[in-house]
Length: 96
Image 1: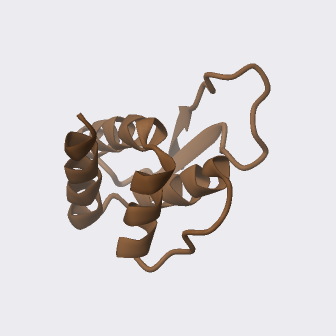
Image 2: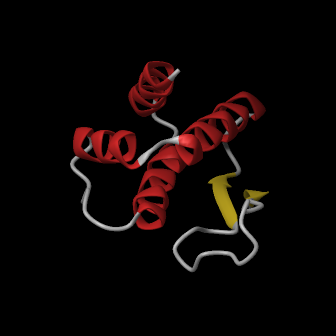
Image 3: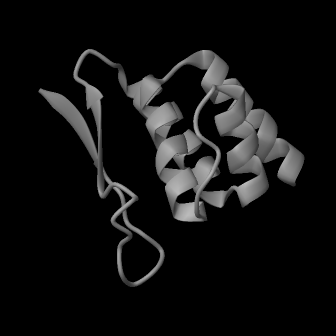
């Protein structure tokens, strides 16, 4: 069984590229899920430049529209790797 998070999109019609449900393996703890939620919120606040930087850092395709980049970045969040979370926090802090 997986832990599910329902994502509410801020715009009226959901994009086909952004998932409405993100799943984590059931063996993850509440703390890792909360880090993933915080990371997801940070990713959704990124501009295209930050999304491209994040994706480039982890050898993912950095081309496409913003919603496509967001979808790829959200896939990274579900991996729940401390290096990925650290990079997301670093980029988010540099935006402020």
